[in-house]
Amino acid sequence: MPKRIVTLPGDGIGPEIMAACLRVLDAVGEFAYEEHPFGGASIDAHGEPLTEETLGACEEADAVLLAAVGGPRWDSTDPDEPRPEQGLLGLRKGLGLYANLRPVRPLPALYDASPLKRERIEGTDLLVVRELTGGIYFGEKLRTDESASDLCEYTFAEIQRIARVAFEAARARVTSVDKANVLETSRFWRQVVGDVHSREFPHVELEHVLVDNAAMRLIASPRHFDTILTENMFGDILSDEAAMIAGSIGLLPSASLGGDGPGLFEPVHGSAPDIAGTGAANPLAMFLSAAMMLRHGLDLPGAAAAVESAVQSALAEGLRTPDLGGETGTAGATEAVLAHL
Image (tube, rainbow, N blue to C red):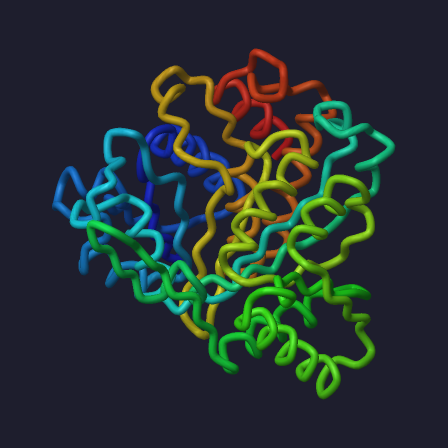
């Protein structure tokens, strides 16, 4: 039986890079795909960003592959209006995806594409482990004509399980990021992470760093970091900052994992509505997200390595999409990668 993959093309450039990605996947294996509307496309079709039917299909799949969601046509300050991003939060919650993994590993062929100096980023190989289903994004939200509030809340169990993911992934050191000098949730975070470290992972080095300091150090000395562990909102911000070390956010994949259910795999970038339909979208982060799916979601490490190697080889041969200073569009980039599979 082929592995079952639910595909969520989503919005903007999503359908374009998803179609390209399926060509790459078909070159390394046999899979059964089931497509569903998601995000803004689902709002247009069904009035909500995530339907029960789509969530149910995702729950039954072996893995879920998402392209992109969102766009200005669905932007609204009205709290009663559905937003595409709500579908993403609902999918993470519904599938129990509490751990987001974002590797940042600049490729030698693209060292000069980064806004940072080559000697500063050379050899960087870090992983951001972001807690994904707690914190301020999921806390109680209140709004009146005069004020608004968002509750940031974490439980012992939520912090403990994400800390274990980070310590298990680390080669030598975990940098736990918080704002313990100001926030009570951060002080609790620091206490629980320290407890998990001392009880279960004393052989791994642990350092606690305030989020503002971590943001500066990511630019000043990215090679320092091995595994960055942080809560939901801080992880959202820091992982996008770290993306620029690699030269373009169009190169970075991510995996969202939980318990026994399927994982969700998606590129870090957004839906880029300004270039949707032009054929200029960079599909490489989508390909690398599929590689993470092959490795972490479908237990096909050989196929994953083949895709990653093909992307690196194509870049080494000179492939450059517009976001990397070149002129090769989605179709050309896909052909360049396929040529190395």
